[in-house]
Amino acid sequence: MAITPIDISTKEFSKKFKGYHPDEVDDFLDRIVLEMESLIKEKRELEKKIKFMGEQVEHYMSLQDTLNKSIVVAQDAADRLRENAEKEAEMIVSNAQRAADEIATQSADKANRIAEETETLRKTAVVFRKKFQILVESQLDLIRNEEWSHLLEQVEPIATPTVDEVLGKKEDDTLSVDMSDLMS
Image (cartoon, rainbow, N blue to C red; front, side, top):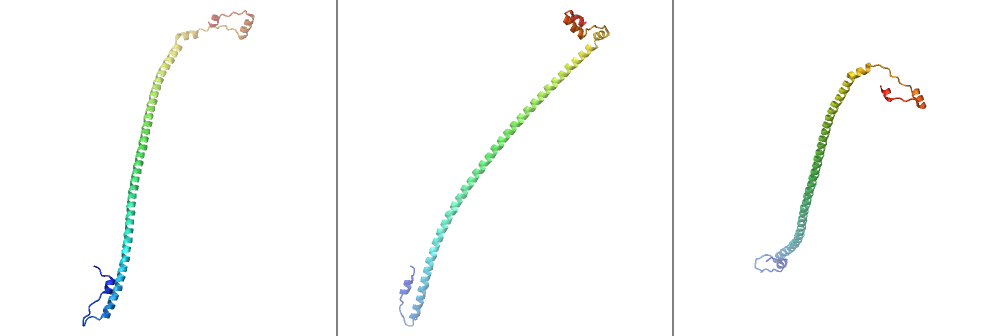
């Protein structure tokens, strides 16, 4: 059991011959009582401080738990955001790749069509050239034909009427021109 200041101040000692001086013992005990009261008071204040600090520690621990939970939630949100951003980036890249593939396919198809059209035009040009060459050669053969030489050698003057004669005779209705005469 703990000794209290009251126990000290009420304590009485038996007196013996040649013992301690009672006033000195009483003075010393009074000082001990004051010191003990002071220590008890200090102890109570320290216990209050300890209790207060314990409550603060609990409060800070609670804040720490809350902050840790908040950090975990923020980290989870950041992870989800990053994952969503990565998925969106993958979709964008995938769409861009598909669009690029489609453009490349369309370009290749167009290039093939142009090459086919070019080849067709080239073949058509070759055929046209061949036909034109045959036509020119046949016309040249026709010009070189002896019939032309024979026609050009005959120099019989053809009597052709003048415009006035044709007009004058038409008014008179006296002219009857045989077309076969004009052609020969």
